[in-house]
Image (cartoon, rainbow, N blue to C red; front, side, top):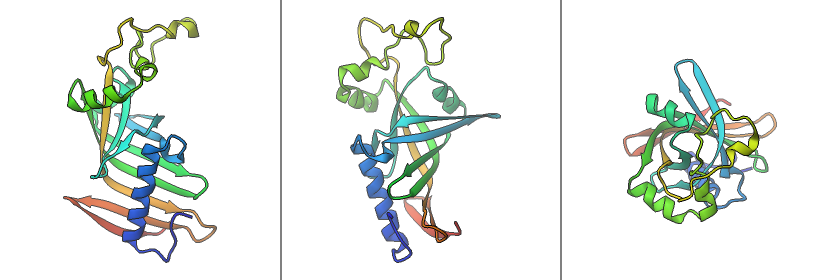
Length: 190
């Protein structure tokens, strides 16, 4: 268990933050891959993405191809939801917030320069993600010169973080609501 009824809300908040930081930095951590949900009108999309960074203000960072469907959704509606699950600790973290898309700016330049060449290839496909193809091999065509033209960074600014600790019949649920620069902490019925 990550936390129990014997922890204060402030302690739980700190434990959740620490575990999220591990998820962003440790490639083997269960929080490294996260479900990311977007919606546009009546269409909801959910996909796994790689969690890249958590900054001191609890902003979450992810990489994507700027031609992807998630970017199209977020350009029209910046609301976003994230779902993390740690199987061993039996804890679920839900995040609601707003995404900002960064492309061709200082932030993307910093992240791009840290990406290994093979990883940069992921953002240099000749075809846009989701393009119809006649065979799988058609998807494996990349630009000759690797550049960051289609590389985008999603910065998610959270407004609410919920943690659910599974524990038999005595689950523990908390809510952390961002107000200005502070976090309002509450217990919730699971």
